[in-house]
Image (tube, rainbow, N blue to C red):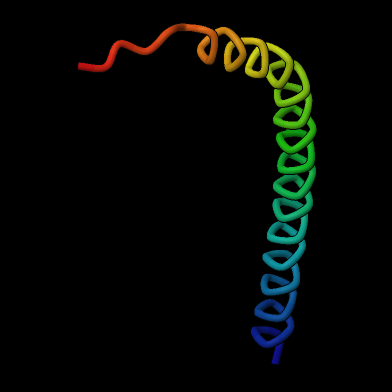
Amino acid sequence: MSWIFAAVGLAFAGLLVLGFLGVRVLLATRALGREVARIHRTITPAHSALNEQVRTIPSRKG
């Protein structure tokens, strides 16, 4: 009977570890999303300026 309690205790401990790691992954993905959004805000003006410069270059056809 005591082996059943040990197995349930180990299973519960394993679920706690998985839950803790899941929360860490969730927090890391949120941080990554914020970082990507920040970089996107930084790059967008430069991307627009570069597109404008590329449009002003005369194309050589023929």
